[in-house]
Image (cartoon, rainbow, N blue to C red; front, side, top):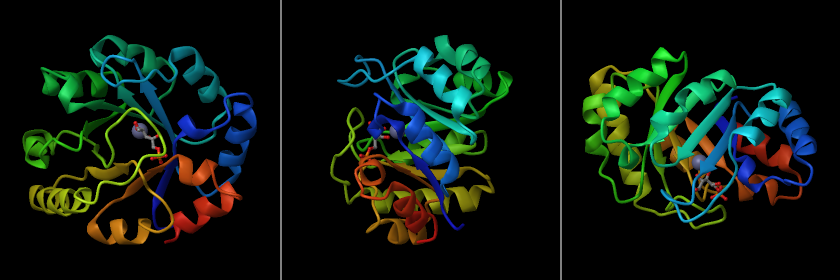
Length: 216
Ligand code: DX5
Ligand code: ZN
């Protein structure tokens, strides 16, 4: 498999999460992407610790948690206890970002930093060598099913150059409006990991859609 595919459970069927989790376990996806929203950092509320706990019990692949919350520092220990592998916080939500990254590592997880569409990638420069994942939001966070913002492609290219120059091994993840039609183009721009919600769970055969994206 060429691409890391991280389906977002936000678009799964919450009435029967176990069924969707089993489908993902058997699919070619690499990670489970968990979108945690607090209704403050973003204008929506998704799910929190108890739901992540049940997902963690059933998932057979690494958990990639994307915290769209204010004060993420308060929850680092809780997500570490649940076995989360990648914990991603928003740059815009962290006053002392370097301290937050260190705390995530100290808790035994890999650290990700996400940037909103309006945030310049250059703001990641001073932490690039400390993080494991840089998440470029290609929609304004808060909702699934939005349209990909084209400018995100240039941001990915610029970030790829910054990472290569720095010698960092940080992965680039993209999140929002990802589908079968833009994965290959984004992979050649430098994306390593792709979050996909509605295009996976809204398709007729989600496992096939994942397989297509993983090898695109
Ligand atoms: C947006 C979330 C995304 C979202 C992606 O706030 O971070 O992970 O669920 O959904 P799609 O793939 O439908 O754009
Ligand atoms: Zn996300």
